[in-house]
Image 1: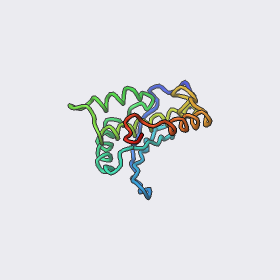
Image 2: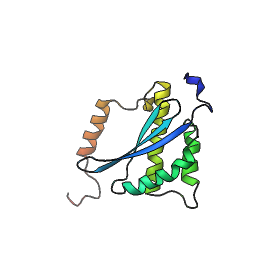
Image 3: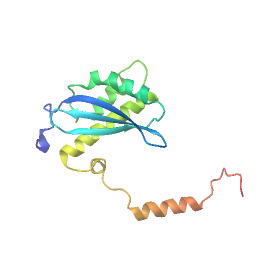
Image 4: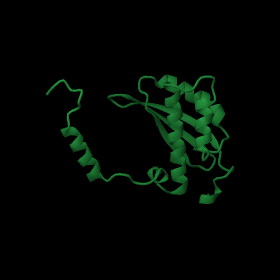
Length: 146
């Protein structure tokens, strides 16, 4: 599908969760499928509560099926503010995983990395290393050692 065709033609057709044991910690990956054959992958960052996050995603699936994956801000607002109480903890992790998958869909559909959609490359490896070294040399003010 062409870049300009992301209108109402795109639909979310399914959401699947994949809990994975990574040796040191658990991971929960989420795949959001579309009717255009493009899928997005997201990850829930809350470890130790994979079943709770999976339950939230299963609950959200009914709200997301048939929606346009390019309307990610609207969908985020729907999921976060759609309940009686604002989302917290496991529900926020579920929303984040879905949101990451929606960004992945956009990047794949447009043929660009997600970081380009978010404003482009920010730091080079050398500047990030320099910052890390500088931070490592400075002692926090709250440190008990002189």
